Image 1 (cartoon, helix red, strand yellow):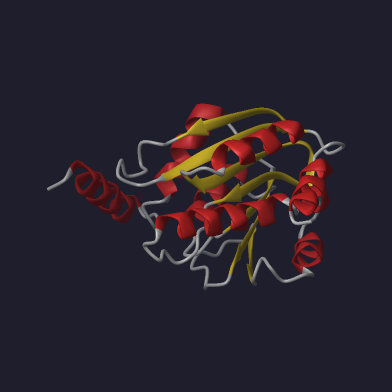
Image 2 (cartoon, rainbow, N blue to C red; image 1 turned 135 degrees about the vertical axis):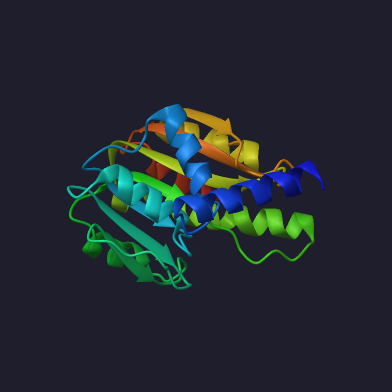
Amino acid sequence: MKLSDAKRDFYRKKAKKQGYISRAAYKLIQLNQKYKILNNGDIVVDFGSAPGGWIQVASDYVGSSGFVLGVDQREIKYDNKNVKSLISDIYDPEIHNTITNYLPKKADIILSDISQNISGIWDLDHFKQIDLTKRIISFFPHIMRNRGTAILKVFTGVEVDKLISRLKIGFKKVEIVKPHASRSSSSELYLVCLNYNSKVIEYLNIIEVEETK
């Protein structure tokens, strides 16, 4: 058995034994152990949340005084008193307004483990996944509080450095992390973005508009 397959199998069995919906839960657990991001009472928005592994973890950390909103086109299989699910396409032009209406206040934390169906054509998959992440970043001025935190999955490739440069405009620190629960053969990385500056993040959207001209 390959090391990557063994790791996947280990975390799948561990998730089943400990009652987690998916093995992906351990990626967020490990990220939180390192950065202490999720705290009691936090407001969280989780994009690409189906089937619900990250929502389940976030729900436990924020407790009954916190709130977690999961956003995905697919069914989210986890439910709790401090959790709501929004089945929607992030390219819906009104999605940020819909999310705002669900939230009791602006989010402390934005999570994104989002990706599209993989085609196997690497350049295409990379650019599509980065575009999804850019779309989520465009919501930040509407849904994230000042000094908030974001964890964003990206696929390795030529666009990652450009994306990090943009994020550094709006966050005090951006770090690249690959949690142990992520398969070694996987191209996924996570950008941990700390201390959001709401006054300058809109510049990210300006850049994107200028690039399309």
